[in-house]
Every structure is written in structure tokens, then in C-alpha cells.
Image (cartoon, rainbow over the protein chains, first blue to last red):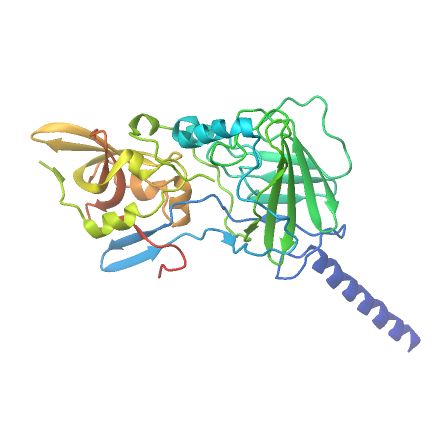
Length: 270
Length: 134
């Protein structure tokens, strides 16, 4: 009898442990989810949030008509728990305001992204896919300039000293509570950190914060560049929905419109 | 002659003109949104590229061949409304009719709003997002 009881107890403990282990690594279901190391689980496929035309497609023929629109992939971000205060525009030093205005007014001629160049960080936004490992985060992006990736140590490794400047920089990350804090630096100077002519210097450093808000992923970035800004600039947070849509290689980018533009009308980017 | 400039489709044009066009360039900087052209011709090529897909038509005007190019929304948009390259390329070599806003510089270039295939089926850009699309 004692033996039977012991077997039952052991079996129950095993089941409870199994369920607990599964919960730790289970996908988002509206509540907080944890990876096996107790940090929030950011891994998964996230919605494509680059602004697309707010149009729908109508198919007609053979007596049938259907209309399909797009899901912007973002959830309302009016008030996001854990978000830092943000401002709409970066605080440029007075001597650079004219330059920013000029770049913004002629952005169809001056914006690198317009000509298929890489958007860089933070303009590329949150990744489409996050692979969360014990000592690294892998970020995978879909972008018309080419599908970028970032491999970001989370185990205390320092920034690389031998890395060349790049569009997506050199990043390391750590956890602050339930927020993943990515420190990205060592950028080329070619990118803008936002639409409207937001140029930067080689001193730019970007702190990106990622955390979970239920089933959603929240992304918020702060740009530091003491050479051109009077203070760091924190962007509004983006709340990104989970996605079941598989990643797909982006078709090559071929810019062919610039020669047909007849004025400097503003375009909408990201 | 299969090429004609239609009278403005006021409603559609106004709707389209009011919509900011995503990622690449302003519609009004390149296309005359008050003027819609309808071109019929043979679909010769489909370029599934960013930032805009491009389709090529060989049309005839007054007995002379005219090569037309039409760009449209980005591949990422078409993908998310369930349209792939094959939905266009299946008609290569066949007659199609394209409705578009013509380039302001007067070239044989436009922004594709609708394509109608030889069998009468069509694909068309219309106002609306997921929230209000049936």
C-alpha cells in the first residue's frame, strides 16, 4: 500500500513538473510567458509593421467578388505599460535644424531608403522573427533593401573591438527586469534614424527596449548622438502583434521612380 | 486603337488621391491622379520587385506598337492580400486591360489600379483595410 502511494505521489510530481516546464516555454497566450531561464520569452514570429498602402484588393469574376485588406500588424499604442516618455521629434542642435529641414523637404532625393539602401537601426523597427537562446538573441528582418539579421550576445560579452561600422551596428544586450535592453553602436553614417531627414553622426548609439505586453511585443528605441542632438531622443513605442505568417525572402529592390518625379511631394516611409 | 484616356473616374480618383501611398514616393509627385488611362495589350513581363511590382504591356495605337509599363503596390502588400507573382504572370502572352493613373511626365508609364484578364476576371486596388473589408 505504501509502495502504491509512493508511486502515485511520484507520478503526480512528475506531471506537475512537466506542465510547469511546458508553461515556461509555451507560446504567448495573453499572459506573461517565460523562457526556461525565467526571462520573458520574446521568441516567435512578429507581424510585418512597415507601413503599406491602406488599400484592399478586390477580386472579381465568374460571378464572385471578394475584397481582402491588410492587417497593419500593430496594436494600439496610446498607453503602453512600461513605456518611456517619448517626443514626436528629435532635439537637434540649432546649427543642424536647417540641414534637417532641407533633407526632409527633398527626401525623395536625399533619403537613402528611397534608393533601396538599408534603413539601419532603429528605422528598421522590430524584427519579424526573434530566436531567443540562452546566451544570444537572433533577430531576423524582412526588408526591401535585403533581409537583415542581427546576432546579439546576452551573456555579458562586451562590444566587439574589431567590428567595422555597419548599418545595423554592433549590439550587446542584457535584461533589466522583464525588458530586454539592446545597446547598438558602431554605425555607418549613411542612414537616417527616422523619416524627415533625421541624419546622425558616427557617434550614434541606440538603446532598443523589447518587452511583452500580453501576446504582443513592444519595441521602443532611444537615440543618443551628442554630436548632433541636444539630448537623447526616445521614440514612441510600437506594439507588434504576433504573426503566423512565415518569413519570406524579400524581392530585390530596383528604384526606377526618381527620374519621373515632378515635384518634392512628401512620401511616407517608416 | 486600344489606348484611350478615360474621362476622370471622379469617385475612385478622389478616394485614391486621398490615400497616402506607402513607402516609396508620393502619388502626386509622379502620377496624375485626376487622369485615368485604360490600356489594352499583351502582357509581356512581370517584375516582382521592390519597392513596386512592374508589369509590361505591348499595346497598339494607330497600328503602331506601344510599350507600356505600370508599377503598382509593393510585393509585401500583394503578398498580404493573397496575390503572388503567378496571379499576374499566368497572363503573360495574353491580352489584358490595365486601368492606371498616368505618369505626369507623359511617358507610357502609370500606376496600376486594376487589371482585367481575357477571361473577364480582375484584380483591383480599392479603398479599405482589414478592419472594413468584408
